[in-house]
Amino acid sequence: MSWWGKLIGGTFGFMLGGPLGAALGAALGHNFDQGIQGQRSSGTPRPDGNDVEAIQSAFFTATFAVMGHMAKADGKVTREEIAIAESVMQQMRLNPAQKQLAMALFSQGKQDGFPLEQALQQLRSTCHRSTHLLQMFMEIQLATAMADGNLHAAERAMLAQCAGALGFSQFEFNLLLKRHQASSHMHTGQPSASSRLNDAYRVLGVSKDDSMEDIKKAYRRLLNQHHPDKLVAKGLPQEMMELAGKKTMEIKEAYELIKNARDS
Image (cartoon, rainbow, N blue to C red; front, side):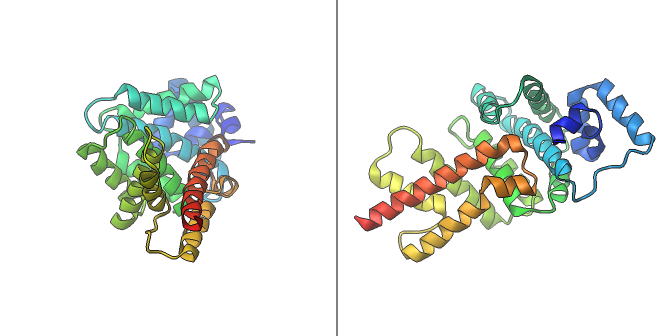
């Protein structure tokens, strides 16, 4: 049974415990909370560290709750930020009940006192510190923060906090940020050919001085990190496969731009 099947069956969701379990229980409503509490007290086991459904449920919960928190970082939630949340839901092809839950989690994240640091630490622990999964999580949050075309100081500070709580160094965070900014710029407006090529190098995290062999290695490494099937095997919710697939397409596009420029 999928994480969603277990959740709506009342046999899994709130057993996450911790701040993510609290956010999920609040989003689902008091009655669900009581039902799960009853099951827990009667001896229903909590998911162990190897339970893929536990990772999927934690990832889904954290994605939308932190997205809501991120949207409020600059003091107000803009239409663009809400649109990004809805775009993620659309790409995930959520059914009406899943979309309702995602929006409720988004609202939970906007609440004063949302325990961001603790929620992120729980996500990191539940995901067994899987860098690839946590990188995908950060990329979704980066898209939320930059939905209005600007990265405000408060948003950048919160993104850096998220990255640190998930175990990324300042250097790794800066690299993620530069790659995302470059990818966004490549697909915004009508950038010149030279500008798109410069962005392509940044998307792959390489420079014009690197050899084609080194660029190919970076390209293959990024493809491996974003491979949808591998991410799902590690615990990415099935519904997010299309998001991972979109990232691989952006990586392939950047590589082809560089390759064609070098071949010409």
